[in-house]
Image 1 (cartoon, rainbow, N blue to C red):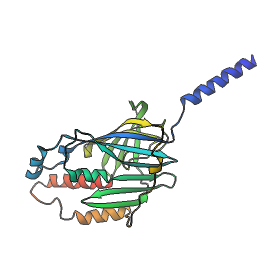
Image 2 (spheres, rainbow, N blue to C red):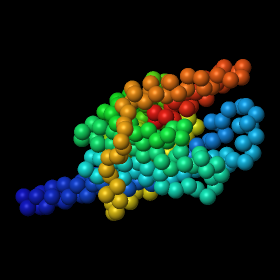
Image 3 (cartoon, rainbow, N blue to C red):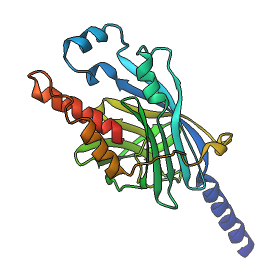
Image 4 (cartoon, rainbow, N blue to C red):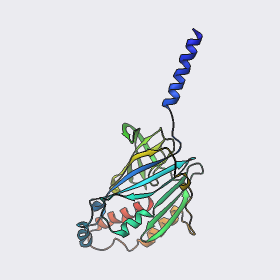
Length: 253
């Protein structure tokens, strides 16, 4: 009888361990959709450009992680995307590196034709976890609502099967990897399309090198100086403020 009990107990623990396999390294691909036309202003130049653009800007990014470090970077464009080359160049240069153990992060952002590299501590994000669930890329995910940059709400779906506390761009801080993300005020969504466990790109997880770096406060001062005279033309002050906010939110995302 004791031997039967021992065998049953062993089987239960073995089954439980198999079902609870946590992923600590992988490469995740995200499809990123931005409603480009909604981000544009209503001036005559933008209105003229809209006819030559696709409604959506669709691209693919990879999130590579191991040893509690990660890098998120551009991979390729969807053939459905029609935008000018200078706009493509902006996205292709952007990179985010996180070292969660050291609580450090780095970002390379192409802003108004200049590459800025930001190096700072990882910033806190306020999250409220809900009871809503959804399956993404084969993983059961739970919804959370966060707030960044004081008043920009983000809606995330994370899985605790993938242990790293990261996500697209600089969004992080949940008890598992974010596989789905929506930022309504930026008209942008990120959805994981596949999770590759072979880790062939592990060598890419390294800090960004630069001769000059900014902390977040330094970048904020730089952007405030650069945009002092921007978005002040015309009589539509509300639209000017919206365009300025879109620019700054994208700069710090």
